[in-house]
Length: 167
Image 1 (tube, rainbow, N blue to C red):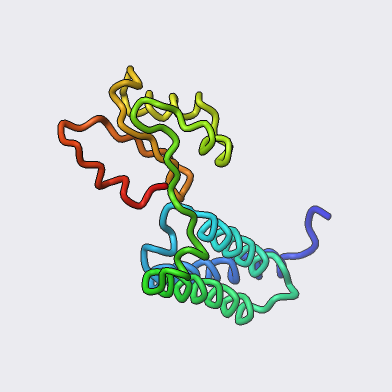
Image 2 (image 1 turned 135 degrees about the horizontal axis):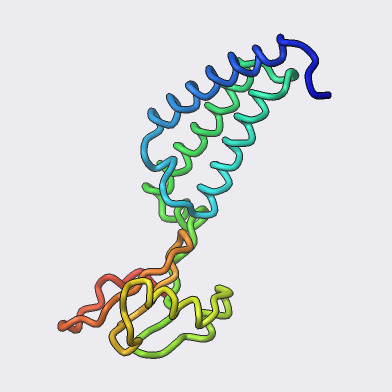
């Protein structure tokens, strides 16, 4: 149906505004980490928040109070998990992937690239995106935990301290 009556439209407007404001308040209270660059865990929470917000706004079967409680539960769980992952290494390992070295000292690491399903062309693209024309100028390329590439230029020093936690 295209249109039944104004009560449904008015309900969506009122509940939508209040649910949206409630979500914004939750996210501000929870802090920046809740909306940080996406890792798999963050992606799932963000999708769940969006789905819950949409359900609260559209579904007549879910009350505003139930929807706000569901949003608060998701944000609260995200906060607890990230709080625990900062304090306990086992929790961090459970919810966060490790960065992966894909290119090191002039060589593409094909075994790591296959395991991460990354083509050589994608690594070269990341190098070009940093404005580097020659792979010989690159010390390393890392696939980060959020799916982005970090390109590390060759340095005048022999230190590789930025790569300490990368396998």
